[in-house]
Image 1 (cartoon, rainbow, N blue to C red):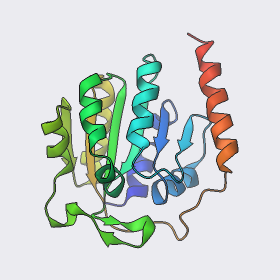
Image 2 (cartoon, helix red, strand yellow):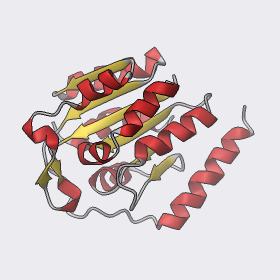
Image 3 (cartoon, rainbow, N blue to C red):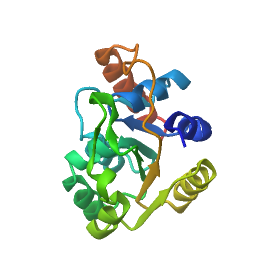
Amino acid sequence: MLRIDAMKAVYPQLERCIVVTIMGAVAAELQSLGHRPGFFYLQHAMGLASSMGLGIALSRPELQVVVLDGDGSILMNLGSLTTLARYRPKNLLHVVFDNESLLSVGGFPTATATGSDIAAIAAAAGVPRTATVRALDEFVAAFNDALVARELTTLVAKVEAKGPPVFLTDLPMLENRFQFARYLKELGGRR
């Protein structure tokens, strides 16, 4: 399964969510599908998408938050899984695209290439719903089930180590930051 195909398959649902991505390929591919003001591309902060998503989910429980993460990124911040499990926001779906490599920074293998299991690590940390999927139809079903369940979920999607030709977004970082903050503030007025 390709990561871009997985994101494309759930894009209509993402349009209705607050989405935080990690840097590199995930951000570039999501933006290529169409930017929305509720999408935040966390550039230059590898490992912190899950932490940022947690903060938003806790402060805005009326909003569905989706974090689009990578295996290299979550492996840099495994402690975030224990923090997610401690607070268990019902409105957070943490998707980890696992291509078993640090694709965006050179393609070096990650620990998942030699057997580490992110879903099992999340479950052991106390995340109540975890799954690993390998096919597009499995991904779509698990993603939709997690949105309906309204329970903290870490969904690991095994994907091919292929990405876009360029790992950049064409939205300046500061504009994305201010646009995202304005959007969240506007949503606050709609409660």
